[in-house]
Image (cartoon, rainbow, N blue to C red; front, side, top):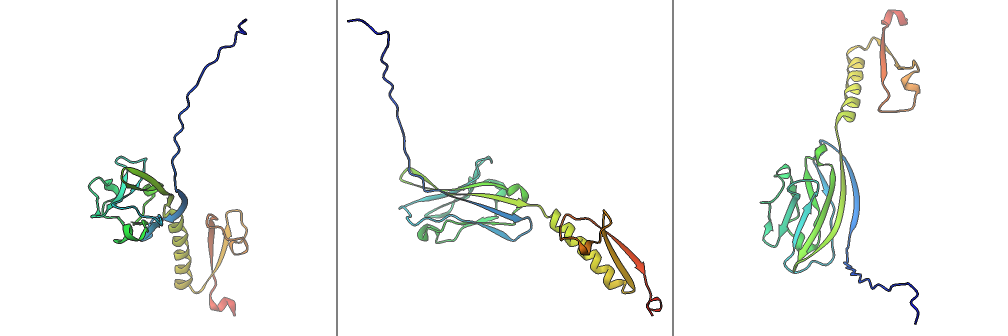
Length: 193
């Protein structure tokens, strides 16, 4: 027999398939709110589970941990100390949602909720949290406070409000990033009459 020059090779492929029940969500809050709820729920709670919330970009990555004995916070990242909580009956009800109190901009990141029982770990949900700073809200409130103060303290003033391109602010569409120049003209009652 003549050889065709082709060689036969056997390749063994090993495929590992795991079942992942994963739900992803995104949250956006402003710094200064009292708390934010990171949602994680499951209908089937295994016997003797350990539930862990993590942020893998941190060291240590543990945000909150709970087992049948209660909260286990010895390995918790210190930036979350006294700022996280879960419902006390969470391992019975399947509501593993995490309350994060006083969120700050550095809390922005991806949070993962996993449950482990009998050596098997399942990812239940991931939450992308974006905590925005107060600067935008503060500057808008500060501008409104100044305008309110001028109107209350100076009732004899007529306010002409213009944008930086000299169009009246009151006629332009609302835009929180729109900077206005407030011009005050003193008009007394005698001048109006």
